[in-house]
Length: 193
Image (tube, rainbow, N blue to C red; front, side, top):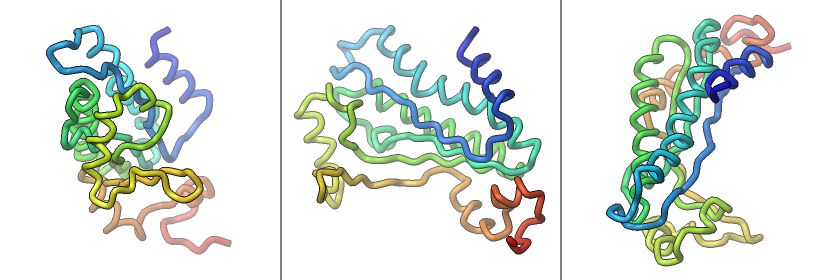
């Protein structure tokens, strides 16, 4: 069974989903572009881009049928800016941004809004193998230097919303059916009892 077939089976088993958060991702090779291999590119794009496409293809059709849904795709500031020695990861996250913009425009009138979240570097196990000099460079790009440990040892990050759904979402939010309205069969804006 392919990943996409497995996701479709899961979607049919669990039923309607109002919010899809696509956050799986891997960094991949931490080396200059000229030292990367085609297999390294395929591995990262399979997870970071094609995995996201498969999840959207499995869950978004039912959102469209119901006329309401939200998709949040995790991109990265690397997809906007590019990072040295992380060409594969940066290109995959740029693809996520392009995918999100295209899907957002395709679905804009369906009631399904698609946005990307583009955090700066976050201290997670995913970045454990990233070279210290690369992490220092990426952290240095954060205007408020919030990549450093905050109080309590936690890390803060800057988030950016991207894509056509962002403005549409903000301007139509009060007119949209909320998930609890959809589940209860209430009209948009009806009082909750």
